[in-house]
Image (cartoon, rainbow, N blue to C red; front, side, top):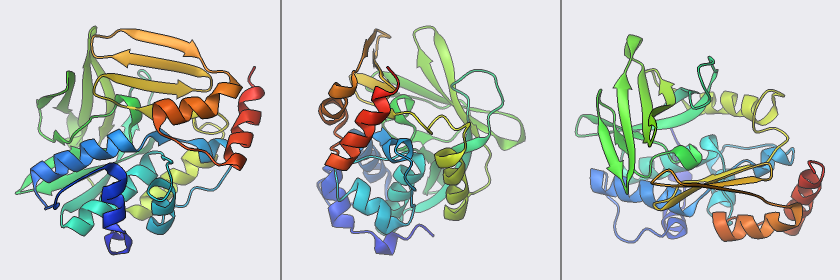
Length: 272
């Protein structure tokens, strides 16, 4: 299903800094998830540059593993699903509605994974960016987990829908909701087409780079860089066009080639 047989697993494990022999069990899933989100940032830079976003595993591997680049949810979770499948996990896709932007009804555009281990389901999502979990979250009503001080919870809603939330100093904040039916790589392709080309997509025409972390979580949208700590302390500053490449490298672990750097410099310069 996820083309795990085409993945260079050793190269992927080296890219995320995972040491040891992976097995299809919960400790491995937790360690892989944490290593992945630590090593590979969420970013839409190819979308911002007007490029096509291929989701075949060879293309995703070349970008996210072969280079120091990241990707957005379809790329991240396609790669993670391929690795999990190759190791022997039972993996299914889900499509979610983003609920982090208020009460408006949003389309199903976020892709995540559900991994089943010994009959128990775990939400695994390496592609939600700075607000996402560091490790898998148990997919049970009322579940609450703390991950390095960041707290996540799951609530069951009508029609089998599950809601992922995070606990902030001001209370619980909704992240996204998803139904129990599976989606497949072909569905990722459809959502990817909307997110990479539709004029109403928040990823088109602007830089969006996100990274969850144990101590600080960072978000760069257009030129606004926001850093959030566990206690809710927030720092904001503006990143000028000439600072962009260095900021992406230093804070997000993203290395641009000359063509990408020049294209993003032009894009950011038009927003001043």
